[in-house]
Amino acid sequence: MSLGKIILWHVMSLLLFVALMFVAQMIWPEVRMHDSFSCQAASLFLILSFLITWMSNRLINHKNPYYFSYVTLLSVLVKLGLGIALVAIYTKTREVEGKLYIIPFILSYLIFTICEVALLQIIIQSAKKTWSK
Image (cartoon, rainbow, N blue to C red; front, side, top):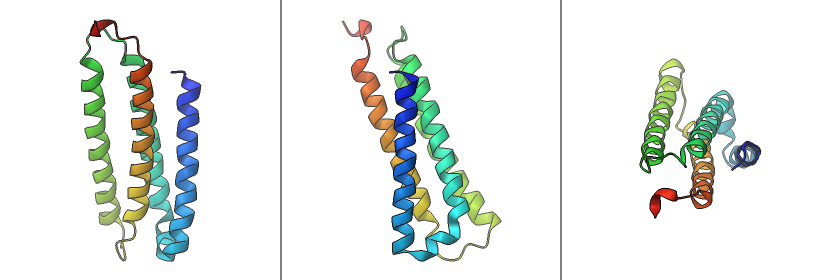
């Protein structure tokens, strides 16, 4: 898969996130108080999703067939850990009123994870599986 397609998928995911945040702010106006957290969460997951997809695209044809799986699983765990750390830091450093700050986090995590999984599926299907013979 070309780098241009990976970038296009992530730009479309970012636009979807912005649209869904607009809808979320219409439903729950209190979400607007957490715009900075929304930008931080979206930036974190956009960068991590892009890096995971890019690395996986480069590793799919590695001579060790399990290397792709190891790197992908490790990166998912790192993404989950960094996401939890982001929420913990945000709640500890700010006087957070209510629990609606979690909506931008969940939206960004889900959107960029779905984008990442879809891209990984495309990468896997398009790979030359010389090791599977």
